Image (tube, rainbow, N blue to C red; front, side, top):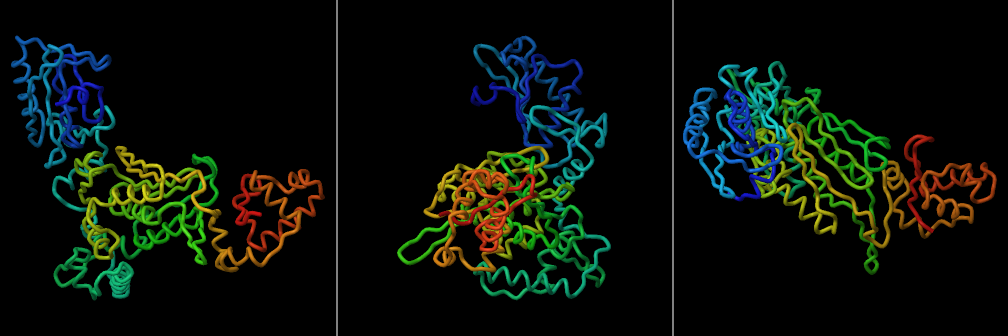
Length: 481
């Protein structure tokens, strides 16, 4: 047991007590909270403010250890069996109470009952669990996956079932997987549908895969100006089957990041500034591992410096951040995870984080950041602030529409000629993309009406794209001269 690990300060997994409180309930909350989350250590004999090792007197040491064992046995339901041992540090003895993440959740204080005595660990404190958290703990303890439960009253129409089967086959083909005919019998085997007394019953997973039945099953996508959420440039709210949300969310990101090109001999090669594989993995993981008992939505946010994907729900069933980063995985939504596997959306469990890291490294990007909170998990993929390629330009959603209507930009470069005013406008907007027509006219020294006429022409050519409102928006320049 490394001293610098357990004596460097309180955390989600460490709590100090100078002495044992007279009322056992004051520290039983911590024991229960550790068992309900990722486990932890309660250390008696350390000052929680100064981290100074005070120690426990030897003449009361074993009495204190017996008292802790009895209090845990008498106070906690279901039974918690901690490991209680003395440890000598700097010539002083402390008592270390180690509690593992429990499998028979939820754990609670017998005197308060389940509703008022269930605690969880949040950062460095033990807090009372809300009803929805208690429900999730109950399902963890019963090894039940919410998405495999019956969706009471949800119909199973033939056309919706056939479409789901066809889409699974389509995804398999797109992923290069073996041809495999999918029908309702296989959906039953995969626990997406259930049979009861001759009737087909839908599971929650079936509803999520065929409709927008649940109001929380949405992906909110947005582009922000700068590095915070102060100013929206664009936003979308995606609904429908979750696999279509994934496709549309990936497309949204690709439309709103830069696409660059290099010329290799006579061949033009295009590459997005962020690896599409990592973008796809981030969004798939968010849907696969989200907490479906939390009515928040998945959020995909694009900032000037990063892509950020946030999913509701912290780590599942005692899984630690360190375990996640080392490739370990616990499946929260078994039905959805199985279908995603059948579709080729996921490969080996626990490999998603590694693929994101590898893709970022291959692109020469900063190391992605993974943040775990009590009720959410966030992945941040950082954009390269310096040009990576010989030619780079912003695409944005509007400019993607221009690409489709007028063809590749490389062809335009060879066909059009700009006048001096248009070239000056482009040069100034590359320096400051928020300049108004009046300010451009003042800088160039011509009438603003002339500026507006030239801007209109540049917009028609697809060289200038306007994003956002007239007051807070900005200009995107797709070509440089």
